[in-house]
Length: 194
Image (tube, rainbow, N blue to C red; front, top):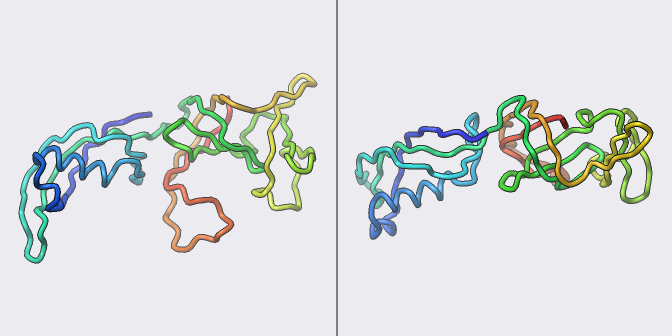
């Protein structure tokens, strides 16, 4: 789930940071640049772990900032396939569930991956829809709650959920995004409930 990733980066250091010790100034700039950002095929940056080396300090013509070649390690969050994770429910709609693990909220369980048999009950109006049924309304606009039907009883799918990761993808950044679409997520974790 968590990895150390060694990265080499050409880092221009703003002149305002030059009053600080060089290692502290570079650490602050690295955090500003990488913290809480997704790097394709590496994952979500949680923290700058350490700085391995700092070289350079060259000032290029026309630039007032010294540029350093920095080698450092980042702590990255990237779940692996078949990993079991515990998360909390953020929202529930006809498409499935959206979960959070505290620092990462782009975890989706599609309706097709929920325990079977199941059904969805809309908040407004109260209407029961099985996961196999098609609806004529826009499914992304229907909010409600999923239920697992087991042994002739309904169990609501709420609060803390354990799931198995089935796929981690890094979609291309869209050039243009429709207003009614979900916010862009640079790293998508898909899974099924355990």
